[in-house]
Length: 136
Image 1: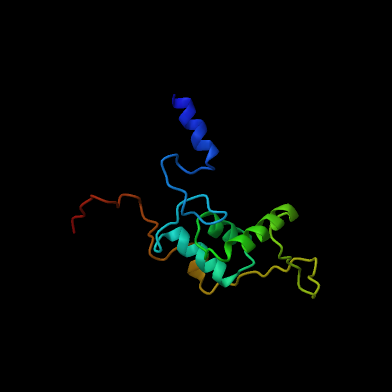
Image 2: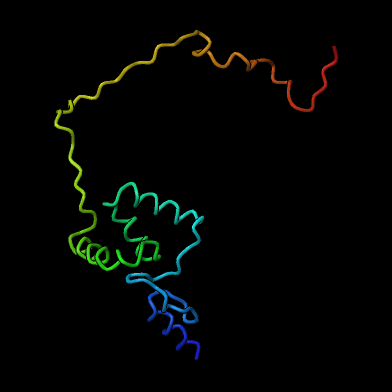
């Protein structure tokens, strides 16, 4: 009996068997998080700033954040991009050639104390410490 329930849950694409999925939008698998949820804020703002973002589109469709009217067209676009291999955005390097030699700069010391050590640390006899009382 327990095995049947587990199989039923797996058939529902990760949605719990007791959950009502009739209000889900096309492509939605999980319940829509609250407007203040961190994940939702991140992916919604990412999608608003970069509509070409594959991961933002995928998350927003799976969680039903986008308007119902836009979902079928965006779902088709997502499936097309999955077949193509992910993001449709191609990044190219700048037209300027980068030199092959690595340029290294040596840091010049401002004060001699930087080379010796921290000025606040005493290089004393080692009897000083926490919990010791000095009699003066």
